[in-house]
Image 1 (cartoon, one colour):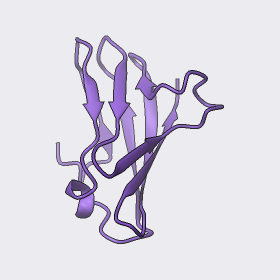
Image 2: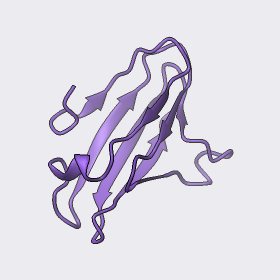
Image 3: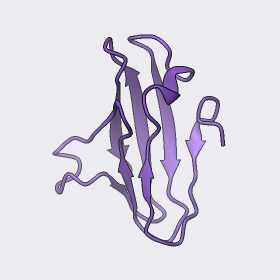
Image 4: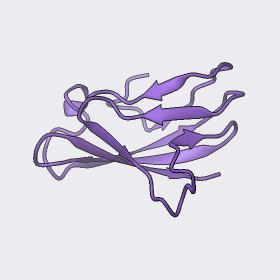
Length: 100
């Protein structure tokens, strides 16, 4: 799938696989300018927990009150919303909001 045009990510992995978000430079077509934002929906259709990590210049955050352990995970049959924001220094802040 092309992350620049898709709105939904639906992995179906059956083994423990870390999911690394693209680098901020790779996402320049999706979020080209400082202040731009984009929302993607993540549905884990696999049989194991997906652990999500930020890429180079892509800073992945979660609210400590949302996920007690601070882990950036989506359980099997779970979902999350990823809010992408382009910062003025060209980094991208990504806020993971789980929906389990």
